[in-house]
Each structure stands twice: as structure tokens, then as C-alpha cells.
Length: 143
Image 1 (tube, rainbow, N blue to C red):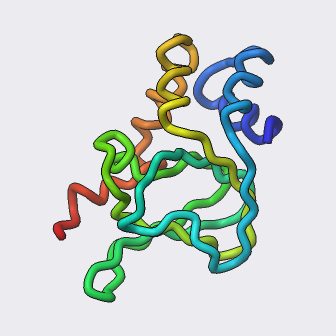
Image 2 (tube, rainbow, N blue to C red):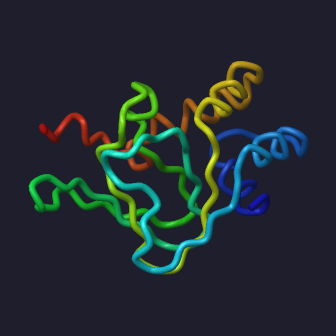
């Protein structure tokens, strides 16, 4: 993970080695097979994810209808930020559309890191502000 994270973070902040190790240490690896679910709606959410390799699809589902599909290509951070920030259950489904390798970190651990490090704070501010990273489903979808 360290190599892909290093390459990814260079677009946002110039971390030194110890800062990268501190960031990477929060993430645990996950391997998914095609059609395996990462996150399903109406489940509690406490993690943020980094897609290292593979492709994911996210979508909303209501009354067995699928709305607003979005595809995620590596490398990218993703989650349901609305659910994380508001401590709600996710409204979004994430599924691997091909075998994928990703990492997850507890969102509270990320927040703690950003509170103790200006560079990490700047990095996550920048990626959270990138619209392509995080869906704003809550603005277009009504239950």
C-alpha cells in the first residue's frame, strides 16, 4: 500500500517518510472478488477506504430500483461521508466489479490524526473537497 499511497498523496501534500508511515499504519488490507460487497446501505459505517487496485461501483437502492451509479477506479479514497460525519447508517452500496485490493481505516482514527498533524489535516481537507472522490447522494436522493 505504501507505494500507491505515496504516489496518490503527491498530488495533494508532500509527506515525509514518517508522515506516510503514520498515515499508512491506520489502514488494514481487504481483498475483494468480483461482485463482493464492500459496504451495503442501511449498515452502520465507521470506515474510510482507499482503493489500491481494481474497480468498484456505488449505487443507491430504493424499492428494488437502482439510482445514480458511479464507478471508482484506483487509486482513490471513498466512503459515505454523510453517514460518517453524521454517525448514520450508509445510504450507499459499494460492490467490486472486478477483483480489487483496498484498505480501510477507522474514520475516528483519521480525525485524530488530522487533529494532531497540520499536513494530514490539509491532505484530508483536500481529498474530502474533491467531488469526484465522495458522492453527494444525500443532496439528490430522498428516502
